[in-house]
Image 1 (cartoon, rainbow, N blue to C red):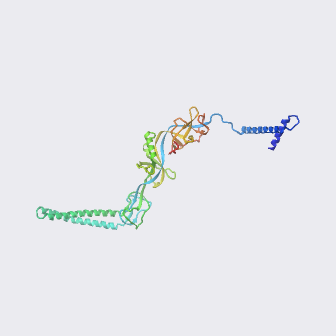
Image 2 (cartoon, rainbow, N blue to C red):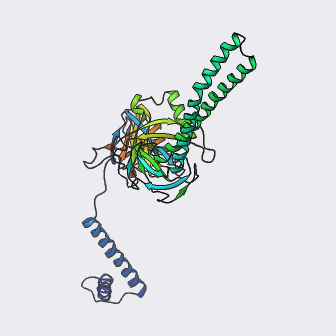
Image 3 (cartoon, one colour):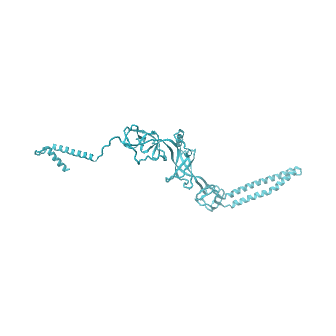
Length: 425
């Protein structure tokens, strides 16, 4: 810096003294003015040289953008809801008679068949009751022939006036009492037989049995509140899915208005996504929708039946279900990179009109499908939506359309549909 000042001083002296004349020292004010002028020239020259040597020339012509032309598509709309698995059938095993457990005949956690022996209760008392009832029946049956023969004989004697009516009435009453006694004995025999048949406890359904609540030697009572074990049928298995009544009403209204169409038998097909994010390989079937609304959650239960041959699904598991709502025959899907939002959060896109100028269009969105938004209103087939170069243009500006980059993707055309947030519309 000191050297530059010396050079500038020399230049000032030369300008002040002239060529071929005796050098003289200029006045102090003039010298400072000359120094400042020379310094400004040097700085301006350096800046100009720097700009000319290293800068880029300004871009000429309209900005370049890439567009996607909107085309109507047929889209199957789906919704993803959480669900819980539940056993297809559940049987809680309880004793029907009192007694002592002599044997447990199953392995905990194994699969059992309907009618298979699970527990055996000591049958001694029930066998004795059965034998006693059987003896009573035999005794009544042994007395009946004599009483029946006596009644018939007395009836003939009364007809010939050889016997009084009272004797005949007594014989008939004795016959009737024995017949009634036989019926009582037969009923007692049947009851004893039933109780005896309850001493071996058998599986009422086929399925997987859980842990046992008792062991050999335990004393159990008939119809006790605590089950001995529980059997659950896991193939097929239920998935209970809560759906809000708001969504249910909205779906019914859209089907009634013709915005969605019913897809026949495939409408009831349901796909499951497991807790680890894997897709369950077998499709379920929507069985029915409950008619009672839960007042605490404002939702109804949709029940799905899913094949479970390998017992991969267990009762109580959390899963996500992809349910088909319907088919939208003419749908407009816009790539998500082309959608922007204003300060209020309202979505909009920038279009290129027929004259090559940028136009802003406000949108109403339904949901995201893959990497695109399903548009409810705001776009028409043939509209050219800017997806690249949006940041460089403004509404009303002229633009130049160039092809999209080879690696650009707007997302798959099919995918699971996600419900939009409240500020999307």
